[in-house]
Image (cartoon, one colour):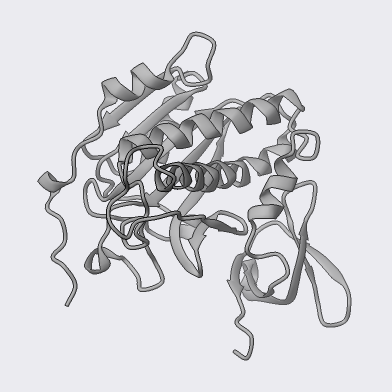
Length: 290
């Protein structure tokens, strides 16, 4: 029998003051960071804020989200304080076609931050990790799922609004088995990660995002000159796999995922040898023998 779920009081709240002190700098990306106890959707809130002129670098974090959205209209919910739910307001000067890289960039930042933190903790960088805890190295499923093995650790949703892009992230941190929304999900606690402090994780993710975003902007949004495409390919668990892609209009594409092109599209080689670029679709990794 699994342990009882945490109560809200057992999950320490995030400190807005500590986040601002650590991340907001005159020469940095992050301009404003707010933490709210509850909201419907952090993405929806920042879409409204963008329309009102909120600056690039605005971050909204919610301890609980009642109407969160994932890709393709799916809902995204978690118990209060059980994970990280936040959205970023960006106003990139890069050409519109290259903005498609922003959710992929976010996935690289999340995966790199989690891996880096848990590696340092496992090596004693933050003192001894809890017994049995260790390194978690997430992988990315195109276009925007963060995985551990084949289980979903987090998801990303990007939305365009005027000249702004809102990028939302949901990451399962403290969920126990009884908390999971679906059996195919997981959390850093379930994976016995050496770091599950949400404040430490969020600071690491935002720093890693800023590092990649600065490189991507300096390269004019070019995924090759910035190194972003190479980093995504290295972390992408979809490449080399047999996949089924459920596309708009009830079309289904099957084949082998071969690469990510310069627009962030997934290239799929079908049985007849043709290669198709997919910009929108729900990817299923097909198991050998399935």
